[in-house]
Length: 224
Image (cartoon, rainbow, N blue to C red):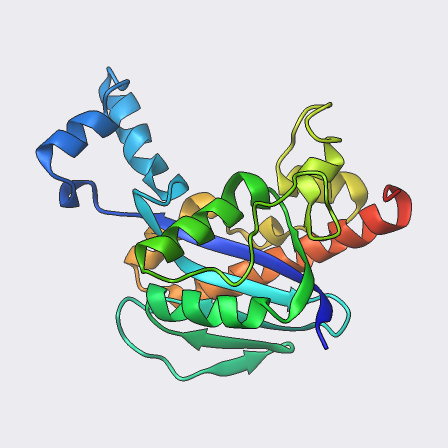
């Protein structure tokens, strides 16, 4: 029997700019005129599935508070470990994507924050590049929150009002923010280069808890 809800979050890093051929480099910097703009463009490589990769996939069942964070460990295996009801397991990007889709198929509702704008297309396109067929379509009918509840869509009423980041919403609703521990998404690339892969995975787990808090608030006061 399929289980009900699962919260999903990913962390990504951009590829080394020098790994692209000369033509691709020119294309990626096409609209960057100054050195500062070029550096900014390079930093943004982590935002797109064709210029970056997934280094962490977090999943949390909000009803049981059990979860799993799958993460890359810079090419080396790390023993799985458990912390706070969450299992941490390392593998290559292909391996963690395969395991993610295998777990996901047992759930009916996926909960994300900005999942339709980032996590879902990133997961599906990176999977396609590894010749992995997703077990679910995460980009189905936009207004069907019972299948994919994107909290950014819900909290903006599908774009009717201004968007804020997750940290801002968390503070506004009195939910503990994952950013309170001094780490945010902009730091993930550098952390990965430094080999702090388990720390990225734990940050991903904290994002899951913040998303859970916002989801509970939405369910209680804003779901219709």
